[in-house]
Length: 449
Image 1: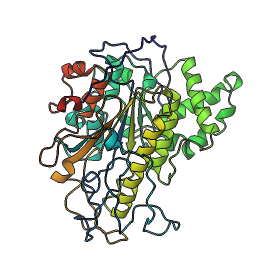
Image 2: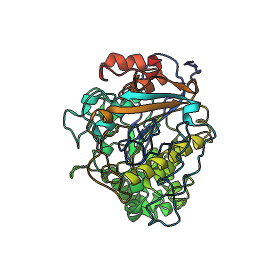
Image 3: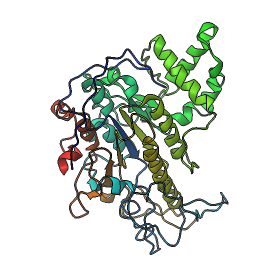
Image 4: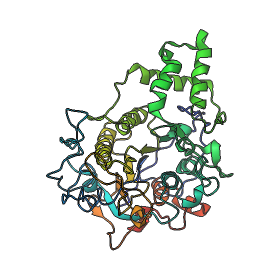
């Protein structure tokens, strides 16, 4: 892989910047070890448990069901022909019809695989294959990061947000975690409990379906008419909602500070988004929440142009009991990922200067459970060796096009690799290695070539 070097532009130290919905202090300038490969990274956690068989191996129904039909339903991401029969993953005029007979049109003339580098067989080498464990490992590069408190606790090891803020000098609005909702522990993944990192180097969490959905509207639907003079109490009410609606088990998130300028920055973003009345950068098909999250992510990218954005898609987490819905949501995630990459090329400052990484948080079992859906197709959990098989896809500046690294017989890569890979892109890889807080198996994907 050619490691194209970019001239790093001189930047001014910024005053404290606000974020939404968390309000964080400014970044601390650190020292880079090498030049940056690109100025922006978007990491898509293709979350919810994705089997290799239906994704990168393109088996479709073969081997999983009593149907001998193969094909590629993720054709924005991967090369390969679509299934020819038993189409159940697309759309339909009748929303009550379980058969989605009309596949979504591809958005990219060339798949992400053909534009970038694919690691088709990556190992999830440590810990249990739980959703939370996979997400924590994805953002921290450390499987053991959940051992301190398990679910409903922050990671024990630093997250990629903390690494880039502390060592690359990025400010708060440069680091975002975009989640589907506020349930489980997703709002806790924006910073760790580590004493040398933590809240002062945090990224920013947003659950746009909550913030811009009914809960947010109920709190500040007329916020667009607020003014600092005479309506400051309403502004504070809005901020209180944002800072507290992500509480876990009754505990409030601690106050994270802001300046008057930051308040105005938040207000401008909220006002702009609400004024759109839902007319955001939505994919052509947007009939599930993952696709709406993609739309709000693009609003965020246009507004803040962050350095690191982690997007957590999770609608495929229906495979425990509905294989048909799982296929449909995988197909939609591919549609959303293709749309995301296509639209990034239209964002000034990010077009041609952004790396995107796509990786499931873990896989799913080889053998089904006993639950059948409306098509009499069996469902799958995640606990065996097959659930430790995933893929990683990279596309962007300096990344070789059409390169495959590894195979089923010769896996290359680890699920903990994304954090050192992003650190490598931003020139702080050796600093992160020297901290000794990522998994011993974790390496930059650039070093695995």
